[in-house]
Image (tube, rainbow, N blue to C red):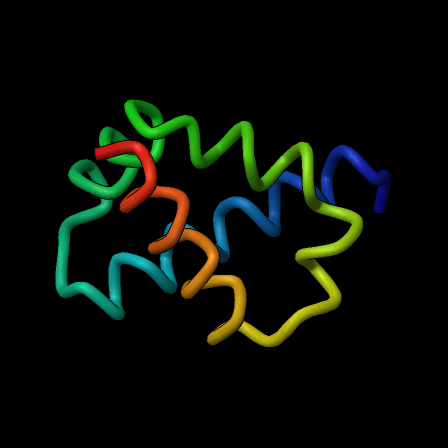
Length: 69
């Protein structure tokens, strides 16, 4: 699997986890992630984030979204 495929898989995983954690639809999460530039954040920080626990990553996403408000 290429690095690009792994990054896509990681971003997809984060979307699914966020959706489950916050009881949202996939469409709502994707829109929120796009508006908050979370997808860019996940891609740009993949090397560090993909080694962390899913709880840590979700908390970082919440911080990033909260910081944009």
